[in-house]
Image (tube, rainbow, N blue to C red):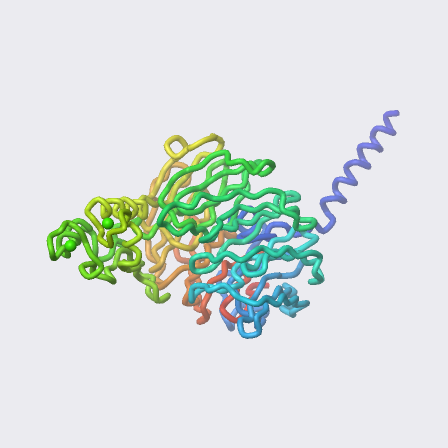
Length: 496
Ligand SMILES: [Ca+2]
Ligand SMILES: [Ca+2]
């Protein structure tokens, strides 16, 4: 009996060891920014810090243009591209060992979305469950492919324009495929059955008067919730029922994808008038009003209104050509509530209160777990300066790291919210790609093609700076001994 018991135990142990010694699928980079969009490589990943076009290059492969980040499925890298001339989207698959294109699947469409000059109609990173690959294209919808690139199902979704073009990526939780379908017309959170593309539930987001509905962020999962960062709010939904569980109000355009560690959500909420340096020429709107009321009727007419006044600026984001936003009569006229073609002082005040909503932003740490409106109760801390507009943050070694346009990097203690340092990476220009944490380093990528690697420590230390001399908008990924970077035209694998 004793012998039998021992044998049984031995069998169990051997089975257990076998189970874990079998090659497990590499699951950490199945979606945008890896597991739950954390942007943290697996503990075993040791990507190079010293690399370049002629250094530690494993391979370089020309790929169709796009902004999606590659995901890793088995040993394959999968991402998307768009051929705007021939009106087709592409899903491509590159072998991570040799850089060879294994397959490419094309999806023809009648139209592409009008996107920002720095963006691409192929902006959504695919997601995989290890068996299938799911892609989203804004003027098509969803498509499910098997690992050989064959179409399993497709689900067309009626196109709705997104300001500057869609930026979100789909994610998977259990059997659900989740899409943040925020847009200017009919913004929604949509949850599909990943096996067939059938809609399970959707939720219509609030449209606020006079503010275009925006969100470019990717959904994140916490327990039984899906969390969305969108215009002026962060919302948690019950994944089963689609009911809103909580919301947090904050000035934000909804671009950065939140990261969640130890039940705390960190997100860079950025708004166009969120910091003093964004305010442009016009700080005192009252003064502007009184200066231009030429006929002293306490109203501004179309003739009196000074078109083109700058109401928000993007300092150090000038290489994208939209460094400032200007006001025109056509926008202000929306506040002519009594329709007399004049903006009265009262109507102007309404406009000013809207402008106030364009501020109040920050890097915020939110304690998850409460229900209802948690704006006042759940905020652990907030940092109001040097907030990046597009890149998400990364939380590593109990520190929050973020880099904004101009190359200003901020490090914050994740638990106390104390700013540990604000430094310059030494690379100016715009930052679009999100940072990557790997092997105790943080990789920051500028749009003009420079990668700056710093230590993930409270002491600011630049490890290396590399110039690929090609635009980079896609977030890099790392696994094994490899670093994968997608530039405007190429996919690079550095390391071993
Ligand atoms: Ca007047
Ligand atoms: Ca009026």
